[in-house]
Image (cartoon, rainbow over all chains, first blue to last red; front, side, top):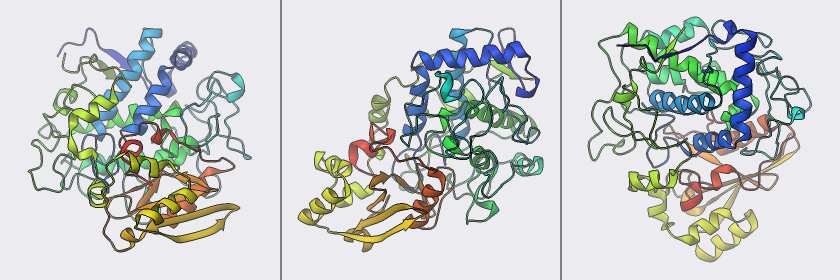
Length: 292
Length: 162
């Protein structure tokens, strides 16, 4: 596997001042061009819940991981059209766990929202800077919102051991391939639990909750931390693959006609809408990018 | 090169992608209620009073299931009698509003509910989901027509969603 052309995605806590500046500037330019809002719309469009009819690709399905891998590649390609030195950094929330650590600094994403309306007022994505007006949103608010740690009823980010419980499962995913499955790496990482207690959110879902504001809603892509979060989720998939080399994306074959999941999920060799690519083709990213 | 970074651009032709993948975008609820035509789309976009009126005219009628003030916000949930009789799937025929504006709900396979405002966990009932949405809204108001209504995966076109 050659890697001459592969670029590196870095831990966000290790970026230099110049790397942070270039990443931010590329994001602002993609936003200015109107491309960023297309990503927000697309994520809303492909979020299909499993209690309803229809094909699920982005969430509550085995293709949660390859769908977001491809989604990140599209954003990264848009960023690199602006500045070819830029890659999407990842936020390891098992390490950077406070409301003031990376990536919540003024030179990167800015901090939590203010108390009155949760509006982010620090950093380059603050509304008053004029460069980050939300056009695709669930509410009328045009400014970015956050409530890091859920101030009214604090919760913690997932821990290393929470993540380890997902990584330790050797099976990629299991029938019925939805948000109710208790076995398999995919849902343990995506994080659909049950009930209203601390198990209601795990890993990926819990991080959306911890950030709060737009990140916990359907328009979560509006917060640039979405990409850093999903880059780390993507890295976790790579780690799982290295640990369980004999295991692969499941299901290998589509559910049979008559099955409740018939035509509702994407099998290993089926096309993953909206792209002309299969989960099988997305399993190995080593020629495109590497994680440092 | 294993991953193709080319292919369809983001936001390119999602409608075409939906069409290409065929039938499953239309829910069984649509088929059961016959909600497959332009009339269904119109119903999905009408405000509550008009929805109530048109449902009364066309049968089945709508029932107000909850109507309360929660943390200063007016939350209301109605559903059709067909839903009450258990004859619909998917969103169960619910129309939920916060201060008169539609709150889009989705159903999970375990029967619980999530909203567009609080999208990464689910609640036992539409009322709990509506209250949780208010908890997350802060001072914000729902958009009269959210992005999901403007060509969402299947909600806007087929009226699948409340």
